Image 1 (cartoon, rainbow, N blue to C red):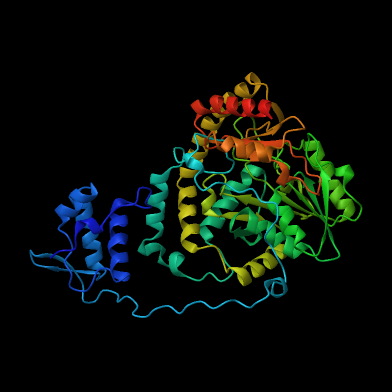
Image 2 (cartoon, rainbow, N blue to C red):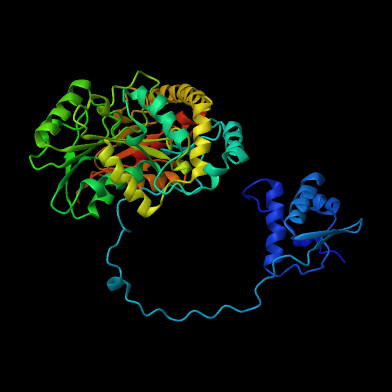
Length: 486
């Protein structure tokens, strides 16, 4: 008797291809002990009909399990659980005892509980997802990314796939960044001055660890990227939040005891303000007076569909005091976790050593896949496609915001992928966001971006990187109605 087909079912939102899901379903049945050695699997025809898939899909899944020795084939009789299949454990896990550790004492540091914006895991199911920093699957060049990933898995790239780089990076990716990405920002750098990171967040962590100690003072923008503020608050350094204006960080307001300045001049986070060129020069002059280092987070410079971005601070730096941070996570997809930092060789040497102590290096296969995707022109093509689409969405959003009487607190003059909004002062946008979720609308409350106990509660961010253009105006109408009802 074959195992009943009723034992098998596909999950509604299963991950991976149908073939992969079937393989996983059978492998889990064997590993859990539900399917025993020698038991016969349903015929490919019966299982395909039961699952509602093609027969070839089931046959390919069986063939792959056969190759991995989970199954064995017996002539025309069919497929059976192999004698060599992994044996499930024959023991009962011990009952857990009552923990006696006093974690309030045992935890020397606590990193939870800070200001963080949670992004719902099911945001793609929202009808009006004004979410920031997430990838739109309709704009991503999945076919060419897959081809680049397969190429990076080939024999020619075996070393990049399997080698331990220790503290080094993929030379192809570093070369592309040096020859193509950085020149677009007016930056010239040698490979020794470039380090690949696990996204911009990892770069900011490395910079803060190297440049700051307990008796030094860091200046951050207010409001700012909340994860940066939380990161610095866990060090022993002093942190001074400096309110930004319509042109970003004001150099004249920098305290005399400033040691490190963290700034987002091209696209201030989250207000989207762009720092004018003359203020950039003043910021560098003030940093020179203070003998302070500058960490420049140049995120979203690629999304400049309304006008060319201003030169990066690093391109104006003649002293070597600017540490430049870039990322592919916004322009490709956030799950990539791939960024880079550029600085003088002595700094990058220390950053490389620190990174190797923590995570060695970002995965070689990911670096080589990205290098192929970039060097073969797929990245530039995707940026053009994204910019064109975002330009249309931005135009629609601007019109909808004006039509429904909402207030824009900041909009990027170059483009970007979000608007910084303000509601009337009596509106708490955290509560507003919860209310809107019931109508399948997602917005991001602005309070976590601000420092101090008296965070303004009436700001919010509208991202438009992942919402269909035809749903922008109806979504804005729902937001406007909810604000008026507060």
